[in-house]
Image (tube, rainbow, N blue to C red):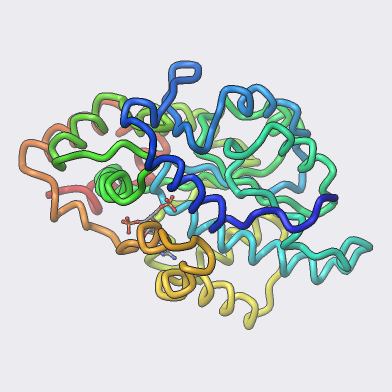
Length: 313
Ligand code: A3P
């Protein structure tokens, strides 16, 4: 197994440098009708992805961009490290860090999936993809999926700031321009509402657990406990507390230069609920409320979001 692959921070820094020299209209490309950032994804990598052999002990995190995937990624990696230590199998002597791939499934090089297939470690795989675009072995081999959802107004707000803070995404002169793009399917990784309605079809599967950003924020101890139980990781009280502490917004923000490089601040911006109130106009609230009602209100995921609590002006 190849050693010392680039860190997440190195990959992010290099992608930002490359994006700085690109024209705005070349930053995204379309694959099967959905836009993706050209500095992180490519059609070749998408085509290679189906060679991934998923395993029943894989830990998959699915979430639309800006739903808190870095947060949950930290929690899941911690859980896997604890699990690995306890398992004390023959692989425990291997350096877990060195076995790691870039956490997002759809970002990397074409050789990534073969390396992942060879990795003996329990794998944490993060993705923003729609279920239909995932490697088929994920469902065939019954890998467990943690589905992370966040209220659409805070997602849009977070996405706006992220797009303007990172050079690999098209930036927007005004929030109003961004809002139109968000509501008209111009976002990388596709439309928020489509994402939720497609994943809603899997929400009752026994191998899928849904968690909301807001519930984890409200009670992180209970959230981490439930996630650990779902993936079969037993935790002592002390371990539970340390996972919660290491994944707190303050800890992750403090550590972000090391984990995410000089753009760390953009990934760990405010980490709260309701920041949308600083951006949405009355008319934009109405439009979002209407879209929510028409697209996902009556669904299981729509109910789980508690829109009335988190999104009503
Ligand atoms: P804000 O922009 O609202 O602050 P993703 O990781 O999927 O890109 O999502 C990013 C959002 O998750 C950002 O939201 C970020 O601040 C928030 N976030 C990241 N780590 C967090 C943590 N430990 N606790 C709470 N929110 C966190």
